[in-house]
Amino acid sequence: MKILLIIIQLVSAISLIVMVLLHSAKGEGLGSIGTTARMFSSQKGLEAGLNRITTIFASAFLGSAFLLSIF
Picture 1 (tube, rainbow, N blue to C red):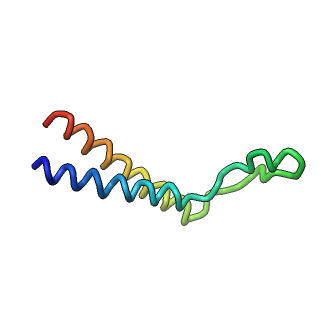
Picture 2: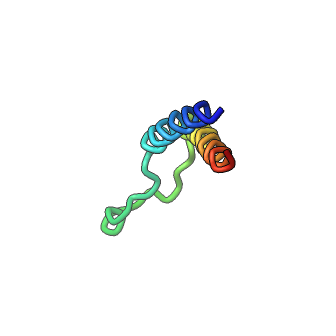
């Protein structure tokens, strides 16, 4: 049981890192000071899907971490 939880946590951690890196940058940062920034940007279908998958992997990671702390 413990080995299965460790494997789930490892896979979800690596997948979570990949999903976060796949997201596009939301803000312009310091580059928006001298130029016009995007004020109104809508989420596209791909970005909404990435948000949903990222949430699933984050929940799996937190759940496995919680269960590992009990065992």
